[in-house]
Amino acid sequence: MRRTSVRVGGEAASYLTAGRGGPPVLLLHGTYWSRVWLPVVGRLAAAGLRPLAVDLPGLGRSGGELTPETAAVPALAEWVDRFAAALGLSGPVPVAGHDIGGAVAQHLLVHGRLEVDRLALVNSVLYDSWPAPHVARFGDPEVAAAATGGDLLAARRRAVASALAGAATEELIADYADPWTDPRVQRSWLALAAAADSRHTRDLVPALRRSAVPKLLVWGEDDAFEKVEYAERFAAEVPETTLVRIPGADHIPTENAPDRIADALARFFAG
Image 1 (spheres, rainbow, N blue to C red):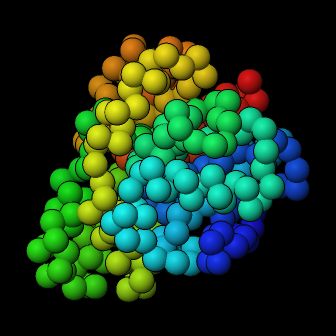
Image 2: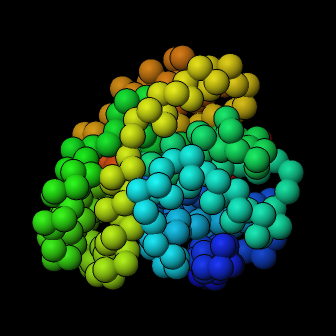
């Protein structure tokens, strides 16, 4: 397991990876950062894959800074296309997305330059399920302008603690929340909240219903916002979709059942 980077648009794009070869798999985060994929990166590499869990620009450990325009799902999907090109990825590539990263992954499948041959969504935004109230709140310009760095950090700590459910410890919460101690990341996250718009998933539904690309949904059943009912609806309406439910897990199920989730993802990506 290692963290490295590549230049995209003149800024460092940081990503987690493991192993030395194998077919590449792109892993995308949303309102958190690549830390959500850490529990499964090594396991995917052990299965013979080359996982690439990237931090979107201005978030996590990546450089740059988002604006409401560059934080919109179509713009983030275009950035992921450029990230893949910077790594020299070509041909079909499986993509997994968590949270808003799932919206980016869906957009890549429907509109991206990168050919996505398998799509996995882990407690992803779907249909009109987003933004969650605790994110939408900071999309209000007045709330965002009034929030101090301490306010935002405290809010993200509360969100992390809830999303981790039974896996939450003070050490793990602090690890997840660490990027939000940086004012630049705070500003980027506020831009992501301001750009959150469920039209970016609702508009994709007709194309997804026509898509024959294999799809896997992995869902923590206790998620109060990205509810498993959304996943059930997607699995019923969108062809070639399989749903794996994770009991006792909330919004970040990779921390609750890493072995089971890594196994499901590895089998799916291997075809």
